[in-house]
Image (cartoon, rainbow, N blue to C red; front, side):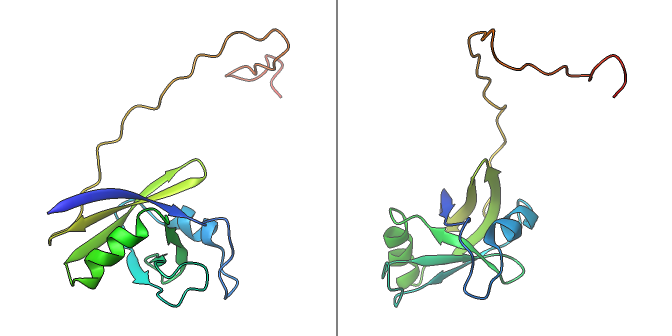
Length: 134
């Protein structure tokens, strides 16, 4: 058994049927199943593997770096299960498990805090809003 977190690329491109990948990705909940569909006749990459969301809408593709490895294992007939892991900014991720069983979602880590130096010309809004109630 082996579990991997893989990036889903191309979420900002429209599908051929006009459906919106980003919208579909944003509606997909962590833990929902996704399907992996090899596209050996893809004109851009013969190793391409499409990621299809739980409602049958394409979310994007596995990255070109990982698709050949995953495709090889799929081609050997290995048992594979995939779930949506989540989004982080402009990227989406899936969790993949080879060898049977369901993938597990990793424990979320605390967001990294970036401490930028104080910029006297920057805009720093009030957390509670202005005192005059607008």
